[in-house]
Image 1: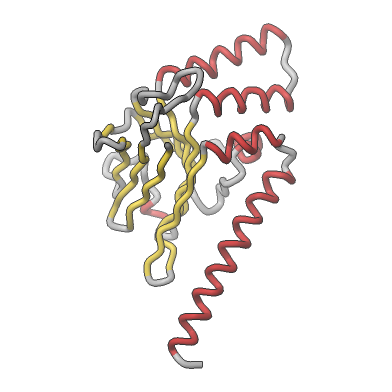
Image 2: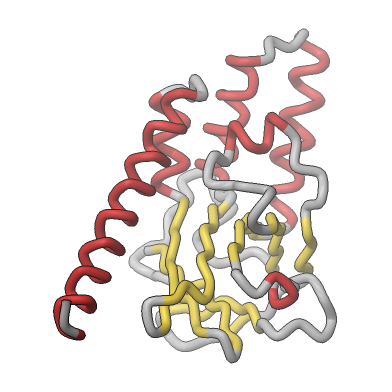
Length: 207
């Protein structure tokens, strides 16, 4: 087999692997008993990107924007699975909504083959994370926190997580215009969550 044939075969294999992974993710969400409504909300507010270099994966990041629309879907799904008493339900809902109104929060899962570079929460991290809107305005995060305790509930609600291969993080910003409202209406605006380092640049866009 000559060099060109090997390259073509490698590209085909990568394509097949990507399709298999995507189908596996969809099936996984269904198999875990998530409702159609929650899966639709998760899909609406989740973005993913993989950076390759010379047929090698440098980084894969999947992030969910915890908008109020997503939070409502999450609360509804949680209460469908875990019926709560009236008082407990009210207290839990108030806590979730209160947390969402104070910040714009993303949760993201990062897979990096070079595990020591999966250090988004470190002060001297190789990664820089920020939000850039469609007018070029940049916003730096208030907090980046690694979520060390990955429970069964977390894995079910965010089925793209694989705690044996990557890390899960919470990323908080000051409230972004158009989010944190009842309609989560960006009013024609868009923004990107940008994560960049010597390993590559990831841009996840919501609009």
